[in-house]
Length: 339
Ligand SMILES: C[S@@+](CC[C@H](N)C(=O)[O-])C[C@H]1O[C@@H](n2cnc3c(N)ncnc32)[C@H](O)[C@@H]1O
Image (cartoon, protein in one colour):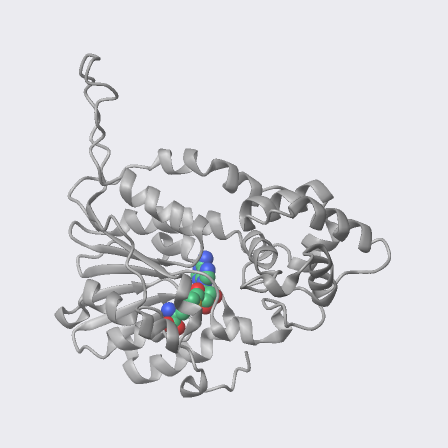
């Protein structure tokens, strides 16, 4: 993103803004943590209310000019950390004033529109996809990682059914040259026999998988949810907008598993005293979806799902079931490889 781009010129629609505002009710005042600041769509709306303040996070240094513009207007009511949201609890101490923590996951329009950053299949040149605070780029993954590992990334993080074929062709093609974005798209298009019949671009799933891996998005999400829950007060809200099924599965499991009392496994077995493993009092069973009107205005919102939960009175405990449930994905992202 061009750092001189002003806030008004970025045509970003904050996804499900009205629904978010009606859940977190900033008109009543308090502190709100916007974990995925982007171009500040949520933060700006919250700050319009005189008694509300915002603490914002974003791992992308390119959003700093937007944060500075908001700081100029709202001064001490707004604080920005250019940090991954997995660090929330080390930057923000528990405060009685906190009302809600919000995550709007994934990448922003600014990131995808900046063709030098390689998030889009329309990008030219090197594959990058780093949001910030990364160990390696998409270029490193495609040009250095083994065939088996590339296949696993495409399969588990992108649900790409042609993962084996794509991984094989990638490794074969890179014997001749270093692969860039166009090469990867070309390989995928050749494998998908009839690319026109696909609703989305045929490279969508592979690009998503590589982006998730490069940015360790599953580790970030799991840690982010845990760190956020640590600092929430009873009655505070945790709201999350997801954009793909793996993200939604994680949020759904976390909220459901830690807001329900476990039933006895069978009514014929002696009653087992179940430990109360609840961190939340309430969660919406069905996700909130964008309206048809919003999807028409902003097609990128079509896959968004909003879930929220309300923190209960119980002391925080570490949600081991969440880690266990998604361990394979966490380990996949944490694999070591030599560049
Ligand atoms: C969908 S956009 C958010 C848009 C924002 N709600 C708005 O209205 O402008 C997602 C943003 O989250 C940031 N992000 C993604 N993962 C992050 C993480 N683990 N920690 C901090 N920021 C992250 C991205 O850099 C991107 O700017």
